[in-house]
Every structure is written in structure tokens, then in C-alpha cells.
Image (tube, rainbow, N blue to C red; front, side, top):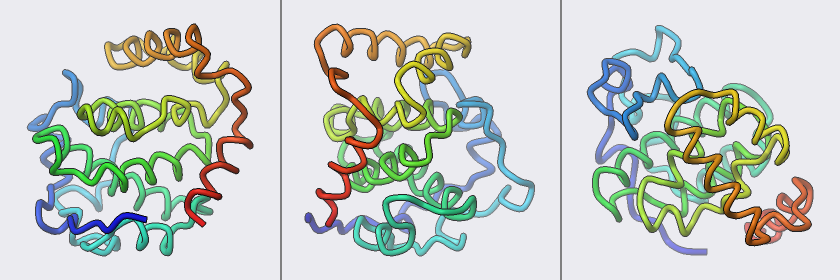
Length: 192
């Protein structure tokens, strides 16, 4: 495992800033990505002041959440970590922890929630490093067919670009023999 020196607390991002439209990801605010809205209690709080420790790294995240988070509070923490690291990486390649971003995507993949697909895609497309670190299959925690159907029904540029990439990757064999179970088994062996 690699050492990760970056901490969320160094560049704490106020959640309210995202929802005020100050930060856009591919012409979409975070709130528009998969329609997720923060509960009122999060508005104005920084990521570092939440229940997520400001010095989260890969090892700490595995300790806190495991590879298969078991409840909504854990998912909320993982999403905050991923959103913060994605924003840092999007601002300047290398500022976000792409290994932590990959782990967060794996954790979300394990739950297979359709509304996390565009969050994972946004993380993957934050930079060239992130694109290489985060496997395209991690968009498909709900299954390849369900993911494609969701993206077809989601009318925005982010969904269209994800759908296009999945189509190209299918054509080149990246999804040959893909199963959620096999992907998680591989991830569990990697992080053990």
C-alpha cells in the first residue's frame, strides 16, 4: 500500500459553496450530479468539521468504512471524502489523493446505488491520473445493464459522456466476463 500525506483538512471545502454554484464539474453543480441534495444540517459546514476525520487516507478509510459500507452514515462520509478529493484533483492534478478517490469509488460500487454513478464518473474524469486510477467498471455497481439504462434516462452531458465511454470500453472488451462479485473479490484481495 502507498503512503498518503494529503488530508482533507488542508483544503476544506464548504459544502454550501458547492450548492451555491461556485464550483462546477463539467458544467454541473455537485447538487445536479445524480440529483443529490445535502441535508440542511450540512450547509455551511466544511468537510474537515464533519464526523469524517480531517486526516483520512486509504488505510483510515478502510478502517472506518471497510470495502462494503453498511449504512447511510458511512456512505455519506465516503461521498464527502470523494467529493472533496475530486474537487482538489479537478482544480490541479496531483492535489487530490487518487488512491483515496479509487477506494471511495470501490466503496460506493459495493453498494450499487444508481445515484452514485455520476459521482464516480466525475471523480474518474477529474484528471488524467484519476482516469487511470479509477476503473470504468466501478460505475457499474448496479450492473452493466442497469448502469447503461440509468445513463440513457439521465439527460445531461455528464451522463452522455459516461455512456459513450462505457460503450467504447464494451467494444474493446473491458467488460468481458465482468461481474460485480468478481470485481469486489479482486478489490478485497488488493486491499487485504
